[in-house]
Image 1 (tube, rainbow, N blue to C red):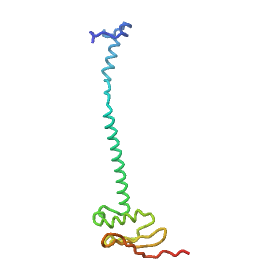
Image 2 (image 1 turned 90 degrees about the horizontal axis):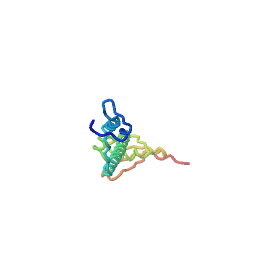
Image 3 (image 1 turned 120 degrees about the vertical axis):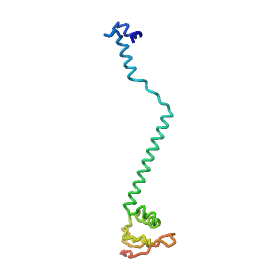
Image 4 (image 1 turned 180 degrees about the horizontal axis):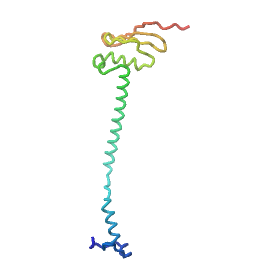
Length: 148
């Protein structure tokens, strides 16, 4: 380091350090060694980063919706075991649970029957799956109250 030439400022100020080094040169070397130049990133890096972040956000949203659906079905009494053992009954129960006007009074998965009550009309009816599995038969249990 002694053999190197000082910068213009040091030669103008004629200031040498205690060890015979130029002060300005020592401080410039310390700064340049401590902070290397930042590497510039190209547009391809930013495009790939943006696509990865977008993919991560989409995965989080899909996971959140799936978790919400799973929790809603579990709270309604539709379990994965029911979906595997009797998928038609589980699908019918999902339809009844989604309708806010209906509430389940009783259910029997063995005979594919669900007894529901309409909150707005006060009618209780039994929903029975067709043996062929092509539809649902609705059998009224209690008639609707007569309006005056």
